[in-house]
Image (cartoon, rainbow, N blue to C red; front, side):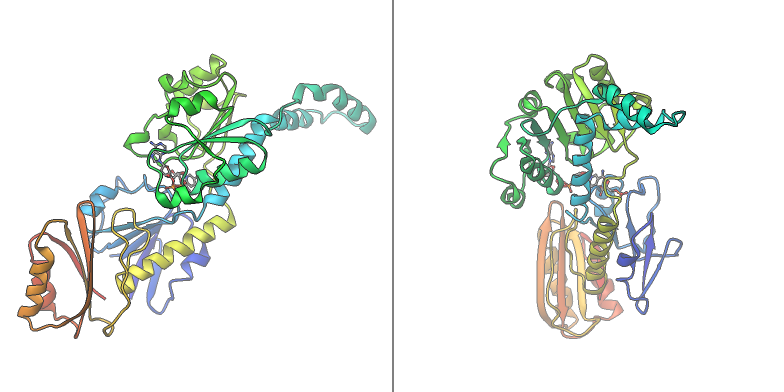
Length: 391
Ligand SMILES: NC(=O)c1ccc[n+]([C@@H]2O[C@H](COP(=O)([O-])OP(=O)(O)OC[C@H]3O[C@@H](n4cnc5c(N)ncnc54)[C@H](O)[C@@H]3O)[C@@H](O)[C@H]2O)c1
Ligand SMILES: O=C(O)[C@H](O)COP(=O)(O)O
């Protein structure tokens, strides 16, 4: 029986993937084997020794102390791309809201509650509507910072609307580059993108390198009257610098999914309560993907879409309970040492895989027979071995 502790509201379609004959799933559970969560912040919480894996049903893992968990041999998963379409659609809404007098126009209409005559109301609205005129997206330039799962979809949609798209992503993966429409032109640096764009949309992770990427200095490069959209994370922008740029009428509008106190009560800020991924579809996609990844790891030791461990998977060759998995510090000699422990105990290896990522290595070894507790203890005692499981 595996125990899964949930944080946040996780889609039931995802949680149902954990068959209750083999899984206990609850928000309040002792000695869990794994967590499944969304934005709940784990930094200030101690981690029970029983936890072997954490699945973030979503993209950003800045709410998880990944480096610390890696040292403890805890695998951290996310669900790449599973909520990208939801965010893309909201970014599109954000661009439209910033281009047309939709919000002020609708707010104005709601002030006319004293009017009783429809003809009179119609005449008034026809007279007032010029106050809410806007402009079109077609022909404007969108700068996309970060061309991963969300950024590439935003770029594609903008092109379909007749916009020009310029992108900046110094860490672009080969896979992401293949996904990118060829019409996206490449900016050599952030300044170049900012100076060319009427709309700027941020789609980078919140990591040390992106902290306050948008600050007083970078905002100097922004084209006068540009709109900045931040559906990525609060930490990527310095909010006071945004306010200064809006006051100076350099930025025309800031549209974001991460409100902060200094941004409130301003007509030039449209702030949403972190709803980028809050659609039925995205919540299902993320939860199902997170659950399947956890199951693959807990039941078979396979790792798919971890942010801190290598991608490792191996067909089972032995019976249930005869697969040994372990992770170790990525130094030479550990695997050899473990294999000699197995040989010393007369245990034959049927199949194995060993992969590393940064400072960690991970191994799956299928054995001819289930290892005894003494064997597991002996493997756990090998220098640099961080954690061992039998599945
Ligand atoms: N508002 C929401 O509800 C919501 C939903 C999903 C994701 N997000 C946020 O959006 C981020 C991106 O999500 P994604 O699914 O596209 O992730 P992703 O990993 O597919 O893409 C991120 C891209 O950013 C690039 N990047 C990294 N550092 C960069 C830098 N300094 N400058 C430019 N590009 C850089 C990476 O190379 C990658 O291509 C997430 O990390 C999360 O913080 C928010
Ligand atoms: O990084 C993400 O996937 C988003 O910010 C979504 O967060 P949520 O799952 O809390 O809505």
